[in-house]
Length: 127
Image 1 (spheres, rainbow, N blue to C red):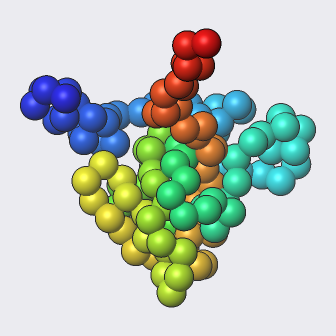
Image 2 (image 1 turned 180 degrees about the vertical axis):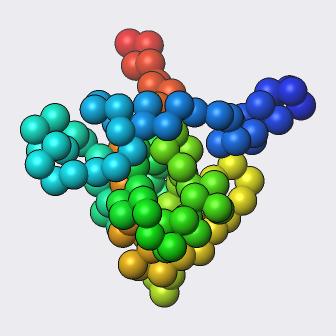
């Protein structure tokens, strides 16, 4: 990868995103009724497995101090995260930063899982 590509890849988490763009309803504030009606496929961060990648769709309880801390750390809708560790605290990577949060704070983050497409299919050996 070229140095420019490496920088673009690393700074991708810092790109500006339209607030709520990842939500099918266009809102960063989740609602159980609205999410069920839209058949939203986002899950809470603790539902991810170690190594899973996801895009933040919304933050629960957006007016709370705890969610404000997440926003101050850059955990906003549209950010791509990778879950690094689940215990004793949740550690996730955003760009080149690794952040650690407790279970209660991690449960406020809703993400849409991303499918890994970084593998190559091998062709069948010649017969």
